[in-house]
Amino acid sequence: MTVEFAKPAEIFDRDVEWAELVRFASDDRQGATLGVVSGRRRQGKTLLLYELARSTQGFYFGATEATSAESLRRLGEALGRYTAAPSPLHLADWPSAVDALLALGRDRPVTVVIDEFPYLARASRDLPSVIQHALTPGRIERTGSRTRLLLCGSALSFMGGLLAGSAPLRGRAGLELPVAPLDYRAAARFWGIDDPLLAARVFAIVGGTPAYRREYVQDDAPDGPTDFDDWVVRAVLNPARPLFREARYLLAEDPDLRDTALYHSVLAAVADGNGTRGGIAGYIGRKATDLQHPLTVLEDAGLLTREPDPLRSGRSRYLIAEPLISFYQAIMRPAWTALEQRRGADVWRRSQRRYAAAVLGPAFEEIVRQWALRFAAPDTLGGIVAEASAAVLTDPASRTSVELDLVAFGEPPMGDSPRPLLAIGEVKWGRTLGMVDLERLTRARDLLTSRPGLDARHVRLVLVSGSGFTDDLQRRAGGDQDVVLVDPARLYQGE
Image 1 (cartoon, rainbow, N blue to C red):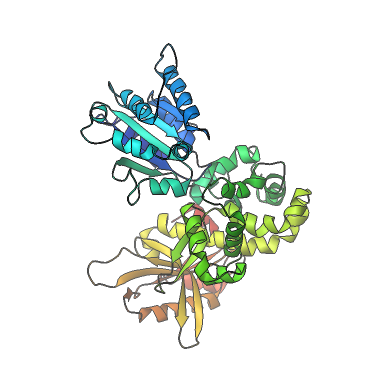
Image 2 (cartoon, rainbow, N blue to C red):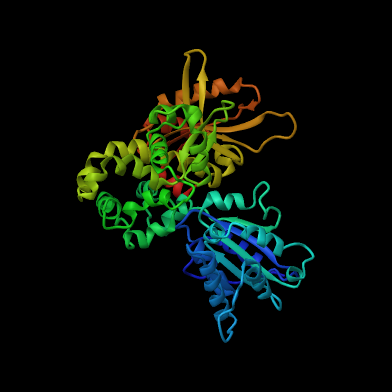
């Protein structure tokens, strides 16, 4: 039986995550269970779990960087306070500590949260194995308990390996919950921004990380479109604000990112538009074969994502997962000395073109792909979109490559049927789109129609612009349902 616990008002959005946590915590069945919660820092995981423990009258423990002995002492003190014991509990070792946590759930389901679990596991390497043993099926301490143990961490490379492969806890968890950044629409609501153009410009810098709205800018949001430039200077490029150094700290905080100079160079290459392995290698002066490890580490840390090209087998491109890092690499890192000297206004004035090309343009393209996946109505794109990405198409007649900012596929077919290609698109932030852009997409559609393995008979041509469309293109779209025009207002408010 699942008990309902209302989500606290201070938690914005996160309805799905809260519902999953409540379902896990209120499970009345006998037997202790394990859940794992992960996500990059600043996403609100601690608030979620603290409020869950408070709402369910559970136990919350926030780990710190400490020796194993100090952590055991702190945990014993916290357990003593929670159980109203006359003195702190003495925990001789981690097996006895885990059993003490399981004992909390003898009489009822009890939420037990261990936040920043990687700190404990790095000081006591055998801790995952200890938990595995404690949760052994048939063990009386487990079967006699209804503790709902939640392990939480921000070190994605560590948390990702906690349940993977031959890891001790693989197969033990009943919940594996990632807490991702807010999507672009939720982020606009969180920042209180109604203007779609302004929302996109802000999202391109701070993304959907909740903490950047409050503590990191002292609750300072742009007061309308005319305030955007001043806001960037006072909130992002200001050495007195925590957001100023945040991109650097994101790399420094992950213990698996040891060669920070190399990782910064890789991220700078991607931010400069070099998304392929060969392009990254050329940018940083390394061989492509030398990049396997740093690329894998950055992927595991949640800072890079690898997106396969659906039209070119074996090809892929890398994207920076955190918009603030793209902004830092493109705008801040090259001018760091000037920024530290509080010349942010001058740096920002000189960076407008680079911001539009290296930050805002790619972010706007990603917003469009998220719109296609999550918000576009089936009637708009001719079906339910199952995959949306960018792609490169080769035109054999002209021996040129055609870059498509949006390639939207439908659900994978059954058997050997060709996969439905629903839409292809052109996305431009700062340019008015016209008939020449439609003709380019039409040519791409013709090439895809004869491509084996694809059903491209009903492809919609999607043109997205932050600057509008020519009159002749609007007239054409008005009489052709296969031509879809999308502006920022539709991205943020429509289907």
